[in-house]
Length: 147
Image (cartoon, rainbow, N blue to C red):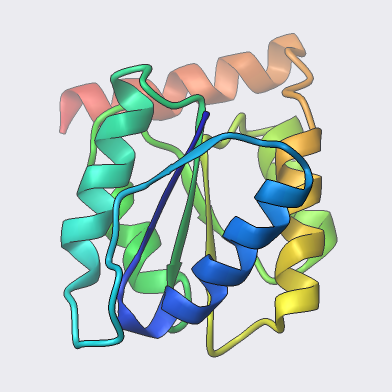
């Protein structure tokens, strides 16, 4: 199960990705927003992030105008490693090396076609599990715990 969330600026991209997930037979839960009315990204980042940290959903996809604001908000939730990406290499490495659990995309930054590519790479890439990457993730978690 994939958690989805967006603000008004990410709504169109989120809806396009929902259609793509349907085509791939990937289940998802949409945490809003559902209309183009102005919406605060932190609200939907929190809902989506909580679905991931609770285990209700395995991974998350978040959308706002740039992907940046919603990624900052999501990363405030303990246990979230959200990454804003706009290129294929970063989307792959964020899973392979950082074991990111939320991908954030900007509806004003990437096209639907690019977003589909990035989502597919993110969802299809597994964490490498290499010791050096596990050690680094543990260091990030330690920072999160201390501050």
